[in-house]
Amino acid sequence: MNEAVIHLHPAGPLLALVGNPNCGKTALFNRLTGSRQKVANYAGVTVERKEGRVQTPQGKSLRLLDLPGTYSLYPRSPDERVTCDVLAGRAIGEKRPDLVVCVLDATNLRRNLRLVLAVQRMGLPCVVALNMADLAAKRGLHIDTEKMSRALGVPVVRTVATKGEGLDDLRALLGQREDWPAVPAQGEPSTDPQDQARVNALLHELGLDQQTPELPSDQLDRFVLHPVLGPVLLAVLLFFLFQAVFSWAEPPKDLIEASIAWLGTEVGSLMPEGWLRSLVVDGLIAGVGGVLVFLPQILILFFFILVLEESGYLPRAAFLLDRIMGSVGLSGRSFIPLLSSFACAIPGIMATRSIANPRDRLVTILIAPMMTCSARLPVYALLIGAFVPQRQLWGGIQLQGLVLFALYLAGIVGAMAVAWVLKRFTSGQQTRPLMMELPSYHWPHPRNIAIGLWQRAVIFLRRVGGIILVLTLLLWLLASFPGPPEGATGPAIQYSFAGMLGRGLAVIFEPIGFNWQISLALVPGLAAREIAISALGTVYALAATGEDTAQALAPLIAQSWGLPTAFSLLAWFVFAPQCVATLAAVRRETGGMKIPLIMVGYLFGLAYLASYATFHISRWILG
Image (cartoon, rainbow, N blue to C red; front, side):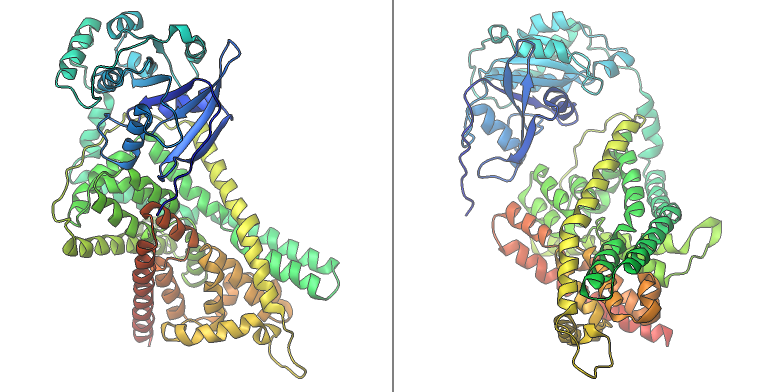
């Protein structure tokens, strides 16, 4: 049972931002609050709560809530239900807003105005922020804000959140409580049949009821959304992405690798022999450095994802994949959470809150960890770099990029297969139509791309300097004690606690080709997948002798493992749910341990079967 947490908030006016998805509401919230914001969860539910402070020209500090986007006040999903509960005063530990700021997309008033009418029926004072006004002007839509204000009976402020235009006027309005219009409640906020007639009349009064000319985005969509050419373009884009992950990353990766090797050699030469030198060189530098070297590949992957997202292409990809996803019992609405899982399964699982159907939401949660997240990329890059030669095929296509593309594709195919099986055994036989907004195309903003890459680099480096560092040092401790007995001939790690644990686990994993070093590295990898790389670096650094200690990890495993073992480990990481944080997120979203346990069981079972088949088939093919 979820505990109900009561939040005690200070007295004073409470403002709430309400708007349709993709109206620029969150961008406006960030501009208004700056760094004066915090993120938590609403009491009793897992929907994210964003609250900030707005400083007005009158010197007032006002609380501002960024409510989840919604098309109406008739809730169909958990996040839309939170928006309705907050506006109605039903949210636990939160009072009813004193003012609602309705954020409208100026390029699509026909749909956005219905939400303003619904808020007014609730008797809530509201003002309108007419956002994206610059885009509307470029399309020939000139909106008279004064006439619109008189027609709605509420103040209307023209804003461009991405550029900060109109924010001073909005802050001034928010600071003048006497100008907040009082509106009597008119009944339930659900859809009124007269709403569309009122919207049409308002658009006619503003001179905006004429058919807008065809936009360049519409012309481009004839090609991008073509039933044959569209999927081909999507496949080419994804294929190019994975090729670039390897080809573009080689120079910076080699530089980082050489710097780490130099650092290990220099630090080792300055320290006397002993446990402290081993801790720093074999534990810290070899372990953490082995993960840090893959930062360029992660940033290249996210560069392409951010460009596709900023340009408006990703919703088109969801549309193109809707038919495929419908064949396995899902809709294209599951695409965005699954796409988010390529970055990390946790935000992907959280993004399922926008899926109204409970069955579709649960299935999407169950298959989200099978999407190849960025934490798997260091593992894939290490194994592909060690065992797949740098060979160009036809047309300049690299063999390494082709293998990486196949691994991502294997995760997608596996997830679709699981969804199809669940479709056979659940009530999800009916395919649900996809309805979603396709934003206009626009050039990606370099500033937004740079911020996104910086945030991803910071997250990665924090993981390297946090949990990866701690577990790497813990593994070094287990691998260094107790020391070898007198007369021992093997490496000291074989006689340590870690060596004993690895040999015990090897009994379980030997049928799929894993040696005791791999078996041992999987244990800290449960905390985060990329820790398996630092664990392998620490284990092989301690197990090596003489000059081998200074070698990079890839040549060491290439000498120690066979090709079937490498392929088996790749198959293991395609399916195995080696991330405790993901399981914790599933527990929070589903409200219990039943679904996480089911996920652990079926994913580990799939991983073992896939690795077993891969290992033995590879041995048979290779003789």
